[in-house]
Image 1 (cartoon, one colour):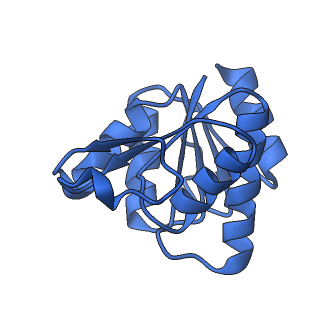
Image 2 (image 1 turned 135 degrees about the vertical axis):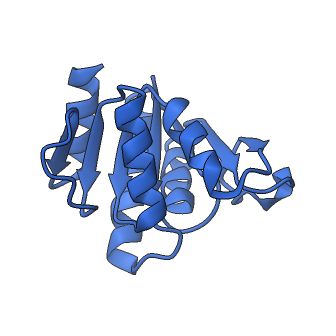
Length: 149
């Protein structure tokens, strides 16, 4: 399946490590990583996926496909800025959020609108949002979305 990985564009090293491990695990389990295509969580998840031989898709905010991080296989330029967050959530069969701020929160919201099961690792407090599961590790997040799809 395709799993959208969303999160902060500038994150501390521990969060980057979590995102890279998540990308690697998704690829090892045969899943394609979809993300916003830039830095931080997005780049780390793509790097982990590529290290494990996986495929990555970056849905970019700008008009230049060359803006993608070096680990994106397929870049999609949108010219939509943050509005592209809806496309990131919609193009995954499930969503996993790692860390993040307002942009990540919007992607979690879009995931809910599009009925995508969503796991969160060290991310926004969304209360009792249907289909959202707080997870302590990449393994738990992947297990949740695999079981939910």
